[in-house]
Amino acid sequence: MKDEILAHLNDPGQLEKIYRTNKLAFKREFRTLYPELKGKGVADFWNERLSYESDEISWGTGTDLWLLVLASLLAGLIAKVPDIFGIDQEYFYPRNIGFVVFPLLTAYFAWKNKLSTGKIAFIVVATLAGLIFINVLPDNKKSDTLVLSCIHLPLFLWSVLGFAFVGKVKNSEENRLGFLKYNGDLVVMTTLILIAGGIMTGITIGLFSLIGFNIEEFYFENIGIFGLAAAPLVGTYLTRTNPQLVGKVSPVIARLFSPLVLVMLVSYLVAIAYSGKDPYNDREFLMLFNALLIGVMAIIFFSVAEVSKTSKNSLQIWVLFLLSAVTIVVNSVALSAILFRVSEWGLTPNRLAVLGGNVLFLINLFLVTFQLFRVLSKKADITRVWKAIASYLPVYFIWTIIVVFIFPLMFGFK
Image (tube, rainbow, N blue to C red; front, side, top):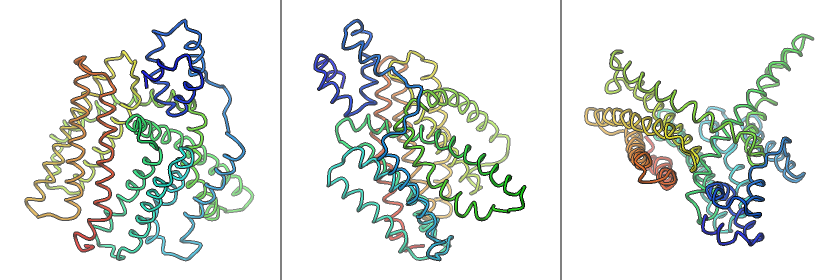
């Protein structure tokens, strides 16, 4: 994209087209070029345009707002399906919780990116396949493969959402990184929306209770559930129409939490040695250990996505490198514990799922850590780290397909 910007610097129409094709990549590459182009009228204009931040919140067009309202209502109605049709909630929600929001978000990005008919057909087929398959699985509450499918199905739908977000094959790695950044921004915005909603809920229920009306049950069953379902949709809409809302918050969070997580992780590993706990013989501890691993990896990926290409802060890169290296140690301990349990008690669906996930994590961590080391050694720039993460994302998608669709058949739905 850098070469394209330089080649069409004096062609306003083509430059605008390049910008609209991939705004995130355009901004990043232009900012690296601007010091060389400063003083040229067109370059100065684009610098001001890309740096301008409105003090007002944009609510988009009237059509966009109506679509948001309709999507929010639809998400709430999907969440209310058990009440509307008398379906057992314990049956419905574990299997279908992902379908409350993900298909609507996927449809939004498919529409915004103007995907081809073939790609839309893939999204529809993949979503319907997940919906039908998960709901025809035998209702055996002791089935490990059913639990694994229910856990991994939202990840499968998240991957389909990523496919719609990335859109075009060209610059797909940059778009995948943009997808990770979008997820971080969405978490921040949705959390703020939920906090505000929680405060409003408390005030509303409290006010009604003062005049003798106990509306807790009615409120949560009819208003609260619609609010919860709509929160990610509203968060997505706000982050796409007003990127400045969290554009500066996310990097701050990344820089703040990366060193804190590093200190916590090192302290935790030292504490384990003195606690007497170990993941080799304690199944519950191993599960928590793996949950910790997933959380730390998410923070690493989010932090890397927020690192600017022009950043001169080597301390930030060092923190990410050390955090990745320590996480490799955590992953290795978890992997060795899984292998120990497999050798002692045999292979089960749960052990195979955790084993496969840990192997994938470990490979990805090695790739990221190696590229971070190269950045610190001045042998590569941060884009190599981005590519190490972005190019690996389809591997996780393939793994979710295996766990959701193949595991139940492989293990006879046990």
